[in-house]
Amino acid sequence: MALVNAAKIVSQKTYQVPGKLKITEHFFEVSRDYSNPSSGLLQLFARSCQKNEKPASGPDSEADKKSAQLPWLVYLQGGPGFECGSPQNSAWTNAVLDKGYQVLCLDQRGTGLSSPLCASSLGLRGDESVQAKYMKSFRADSIVKDCEAVRKALTKDFEGGEEKKKWTVMGQSFGGFCAVTYLSFFSEGLREVFLFGGLPPMVDNPDDVYERLYKRVTARNEAYYRKYPEDVERVKAIVKLLQRFGDSTVRTPSGGSLSARRFQQLGLLFGGHGGIDKVHEIVLRASTDLNQVGHLTRGTVSAIEQTDSFDDNIIYSMLHEPIYCQGQPSNWSAERLLPAFPQFALTTSGPIHFTGEMIYPFMFDTYAELTKLSHVAHKLAADSDWPALYDLDQLAKNEVPVYAAVYLNDMYVDYDLSVDTASKIKGCQTFVTNALYHNAVRAKVDDVLKGVWALRDDVID
View (cartoon, rainbow, N blue to C red):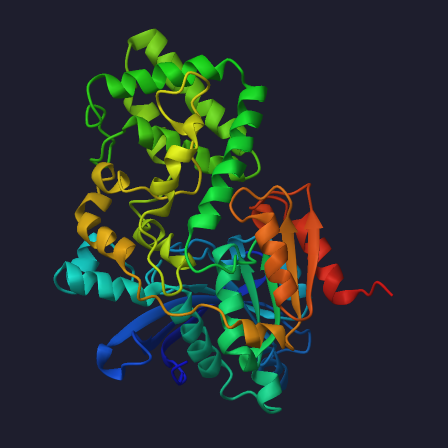
């Protein structure tokens, strides 16, 4: 891996917020390509959080110094391509602060306020080939270098030697994938790692990932139709309407088109707590539109559009398959595998199944922002020059404590592949449950934190 120097701190502003918390907004400057210093710079944004304590004795400079040098815990958001919420709005923040950490919520490069990527900003880089090359700088292999650069910047004045400068990583979903990349190449910067649905499959291309995913999404569709059997005919009627006059007939408020296949993507919601009920609410609303006015109303189309964020988070759409690539192309894996699962066909005689966390070429013809990026997306799908994301030899001799929540019924991250990865990371301890879904760290935070922290704080012998 390329040498990582400390990030340049551009600015730091601190504010008190409700909940007795102190939030600092950080901007950093880092290399766009760490192996090529002349490639330019990116600006990263993060918010840190501490308890805002006011001693009865008044200001205490020594106490302030100790507070500034509390061990860091950096939170890596799922995705790829999603910004990180502010820590005062996260259900887990107080529990982590109570453990004695200070928290850093990082907008990964290309997201939020960290040199955000959209069609217009990407277009400034040059032609489509240049844009595709630029996009390749936004995977986990670059994100973990950013983390190391930021860690070095934040801990440069820490007293007590290099051990005190190590920090903890807490990764949700793709954030966990990044954490395992971190363990592979920069473990010297890590004190401990917490993973929530974030043990990545050790694969070189996405095919096995998506083949398993189709089967899990099938199971979630079956659960959906068992709970709402009346939706079988409702979904068929909605699909028939959307196909009646072609894919571009129903326009979305943002300027895209609501095709039948785009409607199928509502199944992405099935993987979270309450997701089945959310899909039913939209299907019921759309069905009621058809019965009462004969078409989908703007409010319904808007509700469907708001369930996804593909236009607003282009990294998710363009790099979701390549996050599984090491030296091989993705070649639109989900699309290639789709014919093997006829239950997802719009012409099936049985219930029409919704798709899940899959990316398809048609999306770059129907989503308003993605249509501007179609040629770039196709170039990325054909590219085989993806560097390694994991070092199995290093993971096998890992010395950093790793604690992972693994969800037996995780629709997004395969359980069997997760357990296999855990076995490849020396010392990895797992909290396995069939009572939580993938978004537990947001929806069932007390339950999942209790299980994972017990791995850290308790012993079984």
